[in-house]
Length: 377
Image 1 (cartoon, rainbow, N blue to C red):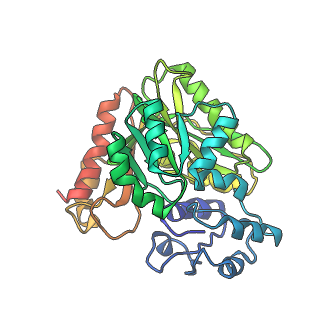
Image 2: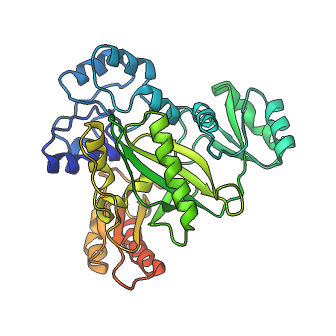
C-alpha cells in the first residue's frame, strides 16, 4: 500500500525472487507506477478500495504508515494477511504510543510528556530545562511536524496553532547528542530476526543527507546495546518486515544511546544495504513479510556510504548522468522517478569503500556524484 520510492525500490527485489508486486498508488505519477506492472490508483483511506486491492494477494505490506488502523483491522477480520499488524504499526504512526512503549520495555527514552496546552509545555520546559522539542504525534516526517522551542515565549507564540490541529502533542527534552544512529532489523511472523550493522545518519534541515555504515568509531558496547534494543522492540511489539530504530548517540549517558523514532518499513537510513550488504533491506522485507528465511546482513565493505540527492538547480537529473557516472564508476545511482522540486528527495547514491579507503575518501566519492546530479555540473 503506497506508491512512493520505497515501493519503487521494492520492485527489483520482487522481480529477482519471482514475486508479483502490486502497488496501490496515490496518484498516476507517483514513483512506483513506472516500475510496477500492476499499480492501480486508489485512496488508501477508503476501506472498499483497500478490500478490492487486497483481493487475491498473499500479503499486504506498506510503503508508508498512514493507512488507517481501523481499516487494517477490518481487513484482518476478513482474512487478509497484513504485515506488519496494526498493533505494531501504531508505534510508527503515533509518537506518543511509541514513547509509552519504549518506556514500558525499559529502554532509554528522552524525557517526554503528552501536553494539551501551552501551560503544559511551559511546565515541562521549566522542570526539565529549556530548550524543548515539540512534535505532532501523527503525520510528521523529514523534519515536518517538529519544532524547537527555546523558551516559554516560543511556546506561547508557536504552539497554539498546533493544538488547534492536534491534541495532545508530544514534548521532549532537547537531547545533547554526539550524532544520530540507525539500528535496522528485520523480523518474520515466526519470530526469526536479523540485524544489519548499526549505521551513522547525518541530517541536514531535518532530512537524511548521508548514511555511513558501519558507524565509524562506534564503541562495541554501544553497538551491541543498540542492536539488542532494536531486536527487543521488534520482538516485543510484534513487528514484521523491516524496522528502523533511529537513535541519538549519547556518550556518558545511560547505555550510550537514546531512542528517537521508529519506522515499521524499509527506511532511508537502510538504503546503503541495497548495494552494500549481502541482503538489501527491500529483499529482506519481502522475505520477512512472507515468512521466508532471512538473508545474511553483513556489510560488503569496511565502509559503505549512502548519499541522498535532493532537487536543486538541475531540473533534468538525467542530463548530468554522462558526467556523474564518468566521474566515479564505482558509485551506484538510484533515481526515484520524481519531478524536481527544491529540497525534495529525488534519489540517492551508494558507494562501497575499496581496500585501504578511509571514510572521508568514500564520502567524497559519493558526494561528487550526488552533487553533479543535483547541480548539473
